[in-house]
Image (tube, rainbow, N blue to C red; front, side, top):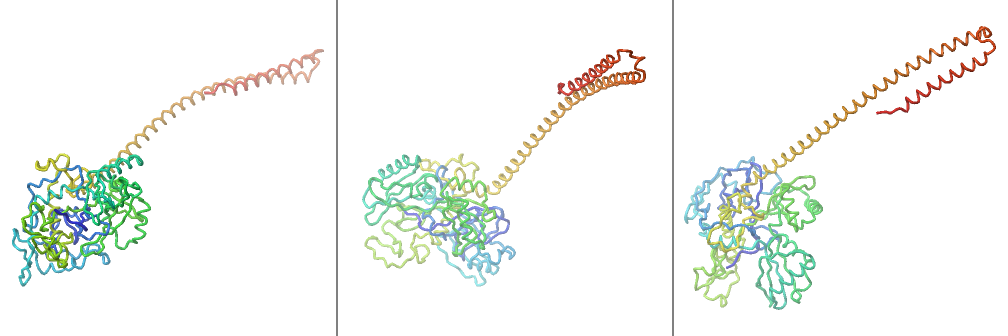
Length: 575
């Protein structure tokens, strides 16, 4: 039993406009992306708003050798009733793509020479697939027959589906020792060291010894979640020795669970400034990689690799990220399923113990069969047992393996359709196996992501609108309450002012009366003075001095009374 290594194709989901592109495929037509150029079938998309990008094996050097397509905690796909593969059903070629849908003049993100050529030739001939095991034909004016490998029409086996749904969700960390050590001792020392020094609970799903060379001891450690992966990815968190021995580590590539994709980053963007601003704004981003298409040409899609699950989830929940004053859409990053390859005959879709080639073994390099591989003298000339190409038989770049992986991925995704994957009951024959989901997001299947991208966007928009309406209503209620309180306060002040005005009017009337009395008395005194001055002897006689002293005293008392009344008015109570 052997799984494919090195490069793996990728799948990620994006909500796009209604313009169909060369490399845009719906989930139903995902199978077509792995076919060779002369076998590619262009199918008209029924839903232009929901597309799936299927990237071929053109990954950068940091791509994991065993990208985890499945995550723990979710039920396995029901593979007892696999749907018929699309390659076994007749498909009618669609009409050629209109020239109006072409990309910009300098934008080669979704195009390659081979794709452009294939689209140009589509007006000249139609391509069809014949059901069953009949070789496919390409109908030209000359009606030439093109032979096709029978492996291309294989239906994914139950064993292949079982193998794909029971893989660990994260690639292992390799711990290499120069001498033999016990794997359990190494793991115990590692977990105790991390728990004691960092107060972190390292969650592992498995560990075992791996293949090694030069008498080395290699121990593979499989983590359970993204947090544990990110913690071990930092070399500073490792102890200096394990099991009392020196060691070295080999870290895997960052998995899809810690990755995101920006589907539409212009090819004219200044790459160095773009990467630098990304890392400045989000320090948890460790790698920024522009993806490539089948022809190894860079495309608009950019992959972000994180070392923090929380930072990655925050950006994913926001659905967008702002870089250099531009908002970019953010989608999840998905890897396709691992393909089961027999380590005896290098056939696809079965384990070694079930191989029909009992008495012979196949050389991985030259594809020759022999009874004993140890005695086999290999020519060293690489020849694939599937397609005859110049590569080893289990190379993930093989077109046959790529096509099989696409068919396998589609069949697995088609079985996970319920909205709530927690209620899915797996097939009884897999009850004792660790159930693995089909996505990098917990409690959400890849199929549901494909179907729910539009609805999720609408739900996000509705949530934002509801949030705005709630805030507006709260502000309205607060304003209304403030106005009512202001009215009540103004009414209270009005009553107090009215009462004070009435008191002031009453005091004014009292002062007017006193002023009138004072004026009358003053007039009388002046009149008496004038009379006395004219006839002092007749009116006063000998006591005129005493008379005037009395009059002056009366005037002083009157003035004192008026001044006192005015002072009491000024110092009186005020409301």
